[in-house]
Length: 275
Image 1: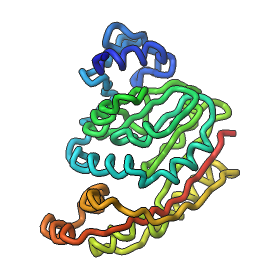
Image 2: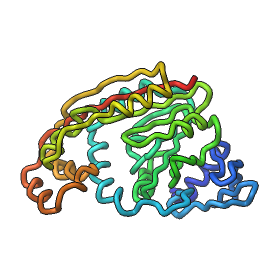
Image 3: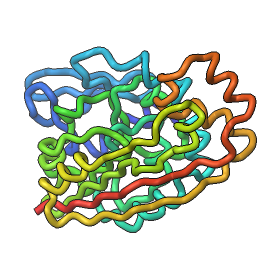
Image 4: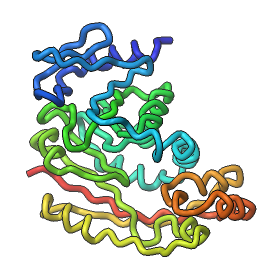
């Protein structure tokens, strides 16, 4: 079996034209385990096959393995299967870029006739993504405002529960490319909010309006269902979301004695095509 760094280097060798230097915007060449642009800006693959394109320190405090591990278990248990099934119907031939890819499970579960790329600012997330041995993709630590991907290199930009930068999305999309954005709707994870004593007050109207400004002919689909949490994952449910940051460890431990048995998944999927 190939080492992770060799697996990533082979993938990059086949997809080198999809990348560009975030400093000078020139293309790269690959020399062994390093991406080098015409101006000699150099980005090395680490032993996990990840490249750090950030000019700031990656996030090692908030989005950590302690949150990504339970999230991965729940995603892989089928919690988001209906959402992913709908996204699959929207995918087109060409490269797929997962924005804020976390620990990689969403990208792993999506089949696409093209190549896969994911990035995040969370160090634990991209490192965990490389642990998905069957996933063929390239992961990096990257800045949403200055993506290390070439102009017109992506057929689809996937944006699941993460911020957007439509200027950069527009740049990296092909002429007939698309953005698929998934946002929480009113009752998303209401059981978790209730258990934590937080209001069920999701209102993403501003997000939708901003999307509509960029994609006036966008389409949207609402998906809502109750997912029966497997008994062995009910305490994991308490740790899968940043919502837990708002409660104390003592409160969380008490809730864990009788955790929720179901999870409401209520989202809107927005699809906008580049014009």
